[in-house]
Length: 163
Image (tube, rainbow, N blue to C red; front, side, top):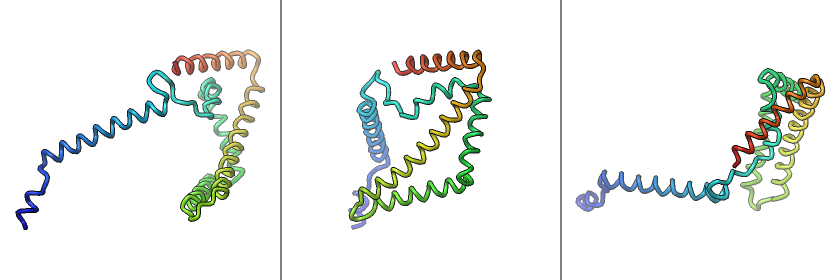
């Protein structure tokens, strides 16, 4: 019986070959999945809806981005400390996980958790937009024109990158 076990063992060389074969198959599967998800070679990946604000934030100076970020975080702190906000987000994700694992599955309950998460994200996005509008409104006409030029340049860079 001991001889049977020894004869069934895979040699180290064969193990390496099998491992390399598995790695190659996973790499090929990854490439195929990438083509399927992006639409094929030469096509850009789909845009994230949050990318709409990217040209504006890229056009801000580094100091302005920092100042607006501090202002946004100060607004968020009105809802509670950073730890409170993280705890609330974790609780919602735990609630979503419970809904996903529940039998029978309750689509309405899961949708309600997602709706609350989306609502909170939309509120944050609106706050950021309000802060940006106030910042631009306080600019001189010259500064606003420079900002517009930088937004146009960011859009042009984005279009070039997507081609």
